Length: 423
Image (cartoon, rainbow, N blue to C red; front, top):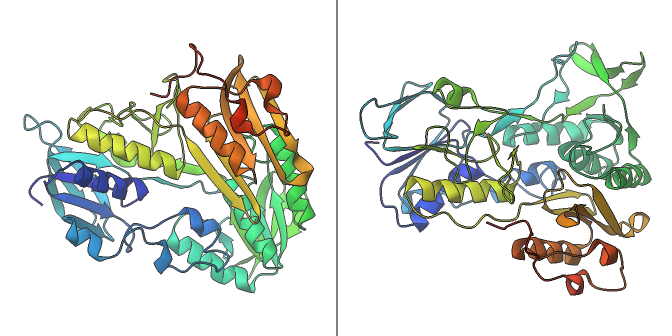
């Protein structure tokens, strides 16, 4: 490569950035470099359809193998970029990247889409065979094979990945226990009423859920895990353990380049780093709140990866930015389909619409009377109504939001003058 754009990280954001550059009419060379041996693929199905055996590896690929050559994208797989040197005094944003294999990649524009890695436990016995993480394709393939032979499965962490995998394991007839150190499930993402719903729903399906359960180590025999040890001194038998306690943004390369990092690579609303000629997108970043512009958030979602990558491509080409999109997210835990629109952070009121025990309900979040977000469980019409309201700057009055006799879309109020802007 003698110029053009170098995208470090063959993630969803990385591929989307390359696609967006071409859609914007960029004809310069594009090199997309990824550590894994595979072309970019979908990660969300790894903890759901793929783990359950309902999807194969080939179906995870974003694009046909011919797509990259047909669109002038040089895909470099199985290479890790270890250093980036920007050219002093040369064209802003230009430089040379070096890979672990010794390859030098010259570029005129640079984007970092390096993602995040699983947060790993350092407790005694954490290196025993049978203690697994789920982040990439190889992790999922290994876990699926192990799950087939397992009997007692312990999931450490009651977040989305842990609960999705627990639902799959239970559907396969395994003895499943979820251990969560916090006082409730999904505590960073949803209201207590939603946390309690998921605790009860998983219990109804035969999964044991233990809250305020701190894991202090693991027991093993012949190098294989046999039990999970807890702070209260008890031990829970296990022949397979999945650890899902969050992720760590991969900021090492950005830090080496001198870019500002604070819980992720800091970017602005256009996905520009502290060096405005270098962009970053996806799970590796923290950004201004996409609706208010206030504060910084890190969003781990397909929607955010696509939106940030699209913004990054426009910034690299000096094109106008698109209006910010409403964040959305989903988590399918067996037959429990959660859809989230907006960001509920900072809410001071919530309204439950429907009966949680029916497994079809929604929770709308407000701050000072302003609609912020919705969690919709098996309620796609409610989800779509609130997503539209947030996009249009409209609201659903809290006083009437809980009335299930009226479709939520008919309760949408005209945009307020003080509504959260959508751009």
